[in-house]
Length: 304
Image (cartoon, rainbow, N blue to C red; front, side, top):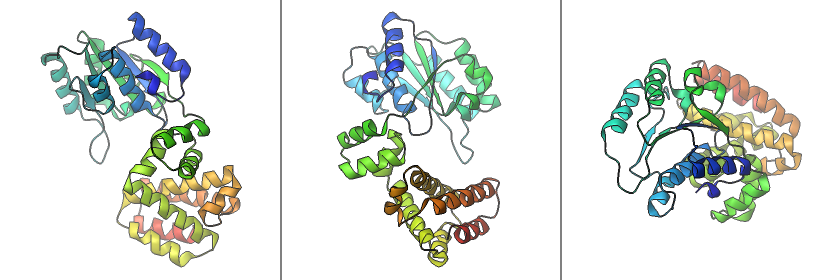
């Protein structure tokens, strides 16, 4: 299944060789920016580890539906992985029986940077004394964000985005119209997962569309309409940050390729740069639990 991972040829060759020779470390950390495929890479590796011959069970791993795969990930508003969940996974690993089809069991820890001190210590006990046949697959956005006690017990590998042309081709294979595939591959710089979400997820599509509207209002110096759009987010902190993130991507794209501004309401590079500065200030204010309504109003005034 590793052959389904886009790009990353050296990584696939190294992990494939480790699997074939039985030298795969029992704890693997896959590092990559959000949307570049670290989670999918983990599932591909898990499928090859559990079901070397492939088949329906291997396909189920890719679809997050296999019974031999356990999952830990961030929960709640904090996004942290609670120690209670780690202990539950430890019990499940140690005391539940394997199916006869699988070569072992896999515990995914998606977003290992979200392990706090207590949950990391509990996780460490499992990794240091792993039950036979258990593979730990961790993902993170950066090795620096993972606690050293966990990081030092893992073999770390980096997942990289693919070139935009290859990303666009893969998106077309997933059913995206060619012009949209080309645009999203460029906009998100080869991050396939991010591009797919922008096509498949209604909330992400809405955020991107509204970010484009804001770009157009900024190009027209239309503070009134910018404020009217942004006030919808006065009580929606997460929605505002999601919109802000899409706005950052659009403005960065215009700086990389100024003619892309025609798809953003005529946005010019100088205005795009100003929006990025204003957005960074607004994001700092909001993430520091500042007044969301004030941040919205200030951003509207500064981008238009």
